[in-house]
Amino acid sequence: MKKRVTLTFPKRSIHQPITYRLAKDFNVAANIIRAQVAPNQVGKLVVELSGDIDQLDAAIEWLQEQEIGVSQASREILIDEAVCVHCGLCTGVCPSGALTLAPDTFKLFFARSRCIVCEQCIPTCPLQAISTNL
Amino acid sequence: MRSRKIPHAPPPAVWEPAVTPWPPPQRPMRTLADINAKIRAQTVVVETAEAFKQRAAEVGIAQAYQAVDVVTTGTFEPMESSGAILNLGHTDPPIKIRECYLNGVLAYSGFGAVDLYLGASQPVEIGSSTDAELNREYGGGHVIAALIAGETVHLKAVGHVTDCYPRASFETTITRDTINQFYLFNPRNLYQNFIVGVNGGDRPLATYLGPLQPNLGNAVYAHPGALSPLMNDPDLAVIGIGSRIFLGGGVGYVAWEGTQHFPRQKRLPNDTPIGPAATVALIGDAKTMQAQWVRGCYFRGYGPSLMMGVGVAIPLLNEAIAAHCAVRDDEIVAPVMDFAIPRRVRPTFGLVSYAQLKSGSIVLNGRKVRTAPLASVYLARQVAAELKGWIEAGSFELTEPVMALPRDRAFVPQDLGGMGGV
Image (cartoon, rainbow over the protein chains, first blue to last red):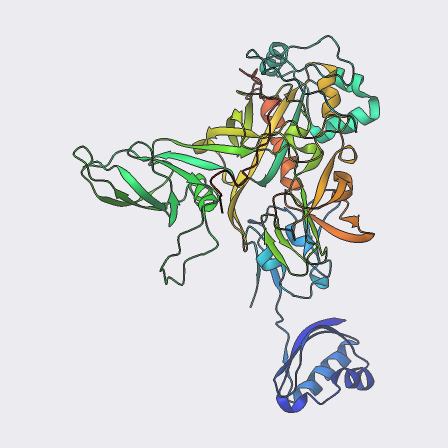
């Protein structure tokens, strides 16, 4: 199964090769969606973890033991269907192809699993129909 | 592309269908009176533009023309050259308004005492406001949409005190039901064609087409293509002054030629223009419009605007008119313009077809560039379908224009004149 989590690293933890340990010790693949890591700063990593359900839980437990904050309430893009007019302007700035117009109906389609929450669509929307939940 | 003969005579005062050289004109086989009789009897055959194009591609224009009486077109796109006329009714004691704000948006009041004209692209006045709740991405388009949605709007007016208008100021709230007239008068709508915007520079641009990303990061087109009203009547043969239309979910009319009306734009052999061309001024009672078809919008770094659904029904009076309605997205084009050059005449990357634009990408300089529309094809189709329903139900008859729109207008630039403009 897959789980999208936001990891918060205290300054002292950023030397750890986290994704390597996840793969080696737990057989969990970590797909990095967004990252903000710099020396002597609190780091943030949005990752999609995929693996066996028990091993995923064990991996998350291990991360917490390392004093890494694990939040499963990750930031998500929300589209207000009542406000959206399906103009499609957002599809031109979406780098991951999460926002597309259906080729036949030209209705806006949001593939949540492809979204990297870059938030470029938010200021692009002329109707202010797009927001994040955090 | 062949050159078009431009008639230099003024348009005829009495409306008559334009003589279209291609395909060969035929004797009109239907009159508007025939079609309206069928509408009243609810026996009229109406098709949306897209359905008609498909039919014409399958069975040919002659047969499609025989089968269908009326084709409905539609668009849903930003139309910033739109505005609302409002008459408030008189206060006691009365006021001659000289400055007026609706939800903080300035409305023009240089008319009779309580007449206002609110422009869609007028931004909210921020001034010295420290109100954290103030939505800065707000403007005239939002106020117009709010009134149409039946919402309450705050009004603040300053008057010029005279013997007959002694009141100096006035503050109240209004809805569309507490004012006298509330109608849209839009000086420029329904561009017959438009441009495609790209950014060949190295910094992001905020434009009226939305964000254009550097190094040809995206391309934006703002026109629904072959479904749009004036693309289906490229010579303005049946659309003229007085044509009844679907305007924002209510009934409106073509009032005049639009500003920047440019019918002399170069054209393809199928008579469609290769860039911005004809425009129309539209008028209609906003009290009968519906919120879903009139939406305020805002382009970050550019300003507010109004998105609106407009539909036009084209009576198929002869086969030439039907042939124009059969035009498809792969037969019409728009020019790709580089917005990195901030001049009136921008460099162009050439012409692309609407079929290419709607496919999601075009090729510029040998590179694939993502395209995104700004017109909602999804809602434009709904406009055409809604108008089709009105006509089939017998509630919308077509009108003969009282005068043709001009087919010969120069497009005059404003150059630095003898006064040495700066």
